[in-house]
Length: 188
Image (cartoon, rainbow, N blue to C red; front, top):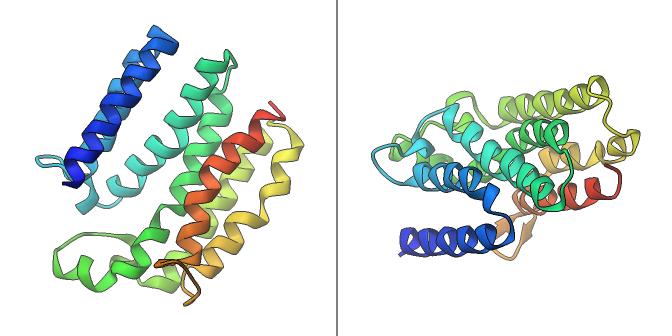
């Protein structure tokens, strides 16, 4: 059922994207491939580290931001690279609650491979590297206002705080990606 809903969503999003700007089609095809290949065989990138966090970072960070730039006629390449690194840093938040199930089904996630605490350190280092990139890429200094957000998210991911059925860190990570893109629109 999830696959049908996912492909339906991608089909509708592609139709909307094409009507907004036909030059989006190649990006939407790649985006659709990344989204489908994450959980659909023969690729099933969800099972393979580091492909699982990179594919998610590409889809949610890079392509979302870059497509928004194409729609709004802005050059978002440097911001898209920042968002790729930023989103990749937070992708393991979804894996903290599934360690036992991931082990059982052979899904190689960072928490399964190195443990939860070491995963938090790796996530923090990747997150900080996104801000180092932002500095050297000359992104607007306002972007640094957001630095505490991923670090607080990473801290909370291993806590037992919940928002509905989800871990608060996971919730913050997935709310943070669109919020960062919207925030960036005001400064780029």
